[in-house]
Amino acid sequence: MRESSFQEIVLQPQYLKGTQGDLFSLFAAPKDKDQTIFLFLPSFAEELNRCRVMVAMQARQLVAQGYGCLLLDYYGTGDSQGDFSENHWDQWEKDVDSAYRWLQSQGYHHVALWGLRLGAMLALSCAVKQPERYRKILLWQPVIDGSAFMTQFLRLRIAMLMDRGLKKETALEMRAMLQTGSSIEVAGYEITAQMVRGIDAQKMIEYPVSDKLPIIDWFEVTMEEKGDLPLASQRLLQTWSDKKINYRVHTYTGPFFWQLHERELTPLLIERTLASLKLAG
Amino acid sequence: MDIEKLLKSILQQHLQLGDAVTTYTSETPLLGALPELDSMGVVNIVTAIEENLGCIIDDDEISAESFETFGSLMQFIESKI
Image 1 (cartoon, rainbow over the protein chains, first blue to last red):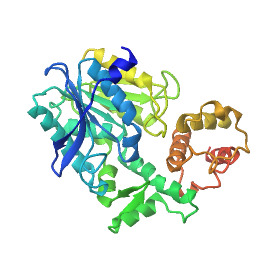
Image 2 (image 1 turned 180 degrees about the vertical axis):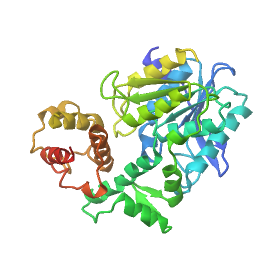
Image 3 (image 1 turned 30 degrees about the vertical axis):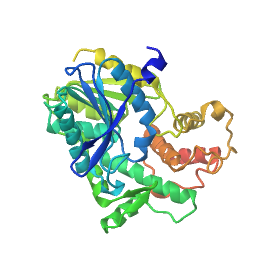
Image 4 (image 1 turned 90 degrees about the vertical axis):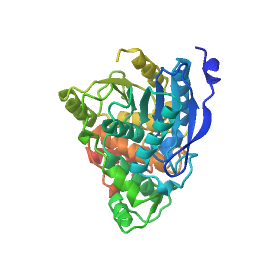
C-alpha cells in the first residue's frame, strides 16, 4: 500500500468514561464487527510521547488490513482527564478495563491487547487476570522488571542534577524521600510513592501465566539481525516454555524509537508485527 | 573487547547521531556539546552500558566528568569491565 493512502486513515479522537474521569483515546473501527480490535497500552511518562508517531503508524497499517484500533491515554496522562500525580498501576488496570467495556458496549467482542514497554507489562498483567477475555497479546519491547525500570526512570533526575551542576542524589535517596510522603519531580513529571510502589512490585517472571492465555507475540530489538534476547528475557521465556505457554519471539533491528527526540520510525517492527498476525494462532 | 566500537554503536543507536560518531576522538566533547545528550540520553547510555557489559552502575558513579568527552566515557567503561 502506498504510504499516502494509509496516512489518510483517520484515527478518531474521542473520550470514553473511566472510573475517575474521561479517558482520551484514538479510535478506528475494524472493517466488520467480528474482526479483531487492538487496544494499545502506552508506556510511562516521556516514553508515551516519544512513541506516538510510531504507534499511530502501526495503528494505521492495522486498520488498512481491516483490523480496528483503540489507542488509550491512561487517566492523568496524555490528553485524558486528571493530573499526572494521580496515575498509578492499579488505576491503569482500571483504565484498561474501562476501555475494554467501552469496546464491548460498541459491539466489539474480539479484543487484543497491544502494549509498549511498561504498557506491555500492563497488558500481560491484565491478561493473566482475565485470560479468556483477550484474543491475542502483542508485547513491544516489554519491561520485565518494574523496579529496574523505575530505577532507570529515577536516574533521569540524577542526570538532570548532574547537567545543572546541582547536588547529587541517588535513586535510593529518592525512594527514601518518597517514603516520607513527599513527591519528587523527575523530567517534569510529579512522581508519587504510590506510583513508584505500584511499578516496583511488577515482576513479569512472577505473573501467574497459564495455558488459558491467548497467543503472546513478543517483539524485541537486537543489536544485529537474529541477535539474542537479553539474558533476563531468555530466562523468563524459558519458564514460559516449561509451562507450555503459547508464545512467539520476533526480533528486529532499528532505533530505540521510544527513547528518541526526533521522529524516528522502525519499519522492521511494523513489518514483523503485521507478519505475526498472518501466522496461525 | 573493542570499547571504542561498542561506545560508538551505543551513542549512534541511542542518540541518533548517525555517521558523525565515526569521526569521534578521545577529545570530542559530549556533555554540553551535544544537544542530543539530554538527561534521557545520559540515562539511556548508562543503561545501555549496563546491559552490554552485564554490570551494575551505582547512581553515585554517574557524573558529569565521565560524560565530558568521548575519551572520558571510554575510560569510565574500561573501569566497569
